[in-house]
Image (cartoon, rainbow, N blue to C red):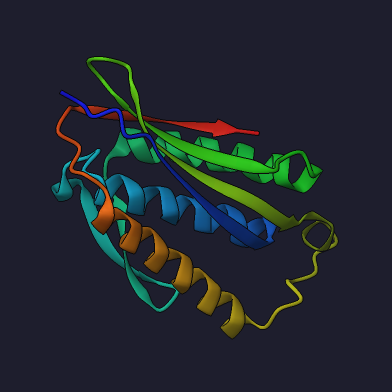
Length: 156
């Protein structure tokens, strides 16, 4: 039986529309792997941001994430997005077990004009590495998800 521990983690994503969109995709993959939402054999290792990232090889999930990330990118360019939330839910009880919230601080104007982020790439990489480590560290303190779970992405 699922525990009623609803976990709320708030992570801030900063940068250009392209950086925020790409990184959110990697963050979702990382959480889905770390929390066992998809089997470990459906993930492949990929070097990104100076880290070894795990990315799904599941065709259906890749298609879904690609469509969602494209829409997120469009909304970021329009300045219509403040928060993304990954919700993990028990399949059986429909109970929300975890909520991973990402506050968004995207520089839509710079991206729309074709300009890059004001920060140097090294600083952006360092921030991204810290967030991935924060996700990994958070997972070590969370209880195992014993029920079969699913996820949903909410956009605010």
